[in-house]
Image 1 (cartoon, rainbow, N blue to C red):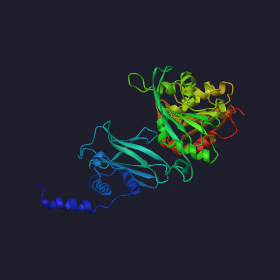
Image 2 (image 1 turned 60 degrees about the horizontal axis):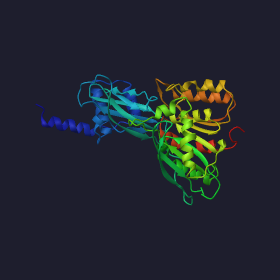
Image 3 (image 1 turned 60 degrees about the vertical axis):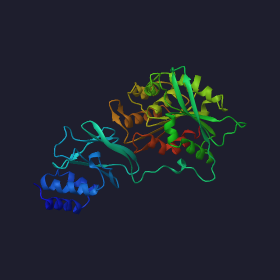
Length: 396
């Protein structure tokens, strides 16, 4: 029978334990502690997260570029069938195994992460998620153009919903009308975004109005299109965005653009039409302009999926083999982008950039350390849109 005084002594030892910093934890984990050393380290880890249910995983602790993770598995001394893993965006989306702290039931990990990034994480135990969230590193922030400014007028979002005959599914999205648009004024330029609601959440309208105010963009109406939803309730996103055919371009030319043109005056020249998107929406944007340069002359592809989800890895070779087309291309990707069975996104975007440069295209590649996420794209938006709409015009 455990005596009450022993329990009190154990509690006192836990209370007296010194919290451990990520840098110190990383050093101690390399020793793979066992026995009393493991018990001591476990007490320090618990002292570092005193109000945390470690069975759900600790909220990561950040020290400059170091991020510490910890979890207690079942609160027992029995190890799980597999080592717990940190999932989410770490290690290019492939995850990392945590390190056992002896037989204490605690597992921990310290990873080095770029200080100007934001990433998601999750704890996986025996293949099941038990906790997670998102972490903004110390240097992460949105640029000033992402926020409203005193004295600047801002436009409005109008809902968009219709039935597509091209895809035989239902569509939703938004139209953003900038403050500078006047119904009795000249026609507006147009920019189409795939995953429109995600871009709306990244304050694309605010960015556009700020860029219009600073004369880095023309008055531009945004068509923010979400993926279609099939009659069985399933998203048609990959079919529409990753497939290398002309259906999405036809959908825009025959359905989306004419519908918006009935409501607002739009320019029809390709140089006044841009298309943008992220991930699969990024390759979709390029595919539309590639097949229909008369429809959209400007491309803004962020973390584009030029990989083999549905054959997109062929685009660098296609660019080299085909005649140069009158389009202007912005690419953006980060060194922390994903690697999976479909390919390596960072390498794929570098390959696209090399092919476009070799062929003589007007192309710009924004390289950063970002992860595969819409917030990465939102942070890039001011620079991305300013360059996409800069001179010279496509084909000049």
